[in-house]
Length: 264
Image 1 (tube, rainbow, N blue to C red):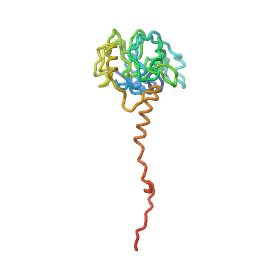
Image 2 (image 1 turned 120 degrees about the vertical axis):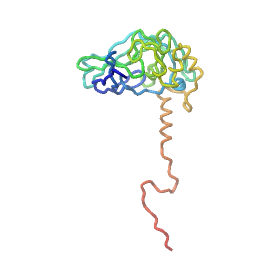
Image 3 (image 1 turned 45 degrees about the horizontal axis):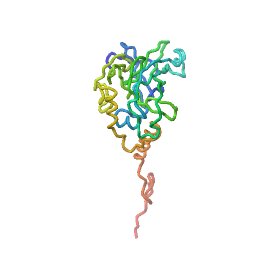
């Protein structure tokens, strides 16, 4: 991250499409972009993760955007210097659907409205923000994105912002990235073994073929929404870290009582 400096804005925690941004990583002086660190909602790097947690994968183009609050409102204590942004996307095509889901026949809406990375505001100046290693979602750019219908909101949303693939000119890995309008990604920009790496330089058909041969994550039942499927993994991991129960009649931890030896 050469030529980047720490942003002066306060740390923020905000819900965006596909996860939660929780801090400022850096500000790119040249591009005027503040990069934020984030925590994905569910994992979505590998083909197995896509076919486990996504309900569908679409090609979509951003057609409109709007700031949902003013700059002055963003500087209030309540908003902590963050100005949210909402984007509207037109669904160009559905390239994969999770046929294992009971609701696999549910139609994908022709347009999607999502919370996207907004802007960091300081002293009345708004700096556009993006999540590290992911697109910002910019007008007139096209993307391939794994989506799901979440029970908590009742709406279709991106399952993980870092899984969204730039797709300008019909080429995976070409287009807007981290707020930069024209990037051609290389494998070093991406997670090894990810859908992005496997499809890099290909088309939407390449992504579809990659997913058609993938198997879900072991032990995850493909039911409910993406959150509930991920919760299966979280619960299983939590259970595996619980201490084994003590055998019946054994000493209770912390009980330092001793038995006097039999001297007879």
